Amino acid sequence: MYHRMNAWLEREIVTKHVPYFVILAILCAFIAGALGQTLLSLWGIQVSKGNVVDIRQALSFWGFMDLMIPAIVLEELIYRAPLMIVAYLDPPLIIPSILISSALFGWAHGDWTNLFVQGIDGIIFSVVLLKCGGMHNKLVKSALSVTMTHALYNMSVWTLVTLR
View 1 (cartoon, helix red, strand yellow):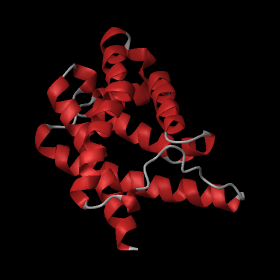
View 2 (view 1 turned 180 degrees about the vertical axis):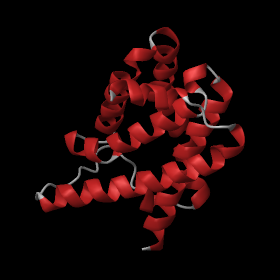
View 3 (view 1 turned 30 degrees about the vertical axis):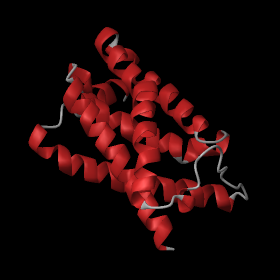
């Protein structure tokens, strides 16, 4: 199964299909986040808010974007850029690298409970990076794809939270 997952990651998404893949990834992130939070709440565990900015306190959409765009770019550099290096130097290590990177991404958003929500998002963002050219060292295509996925996901969350 491990080799099949690596082989699947190797099959790059054709550029004209990237927008559809990004939308699918965002939907998967919402579903995974909802399932993760539901499972934790069924077990009586409260998901930590951690060090995340309370987006309801943002003054406007553009104020939110001023906060989030630099954070998204920095998170992609910290948590996804190393995956490009692993994909280039030692592709068989990509699956463990995704898991480690995503666990750190989840932990950075709070505590161990965030592994079930943001950690899963980290896996999804990692797959976008690698499927959109990251396994073939297509830096611009893969970086733009994952950054747009992350940004659109955060904007969607902001919109849903502010509509409550």
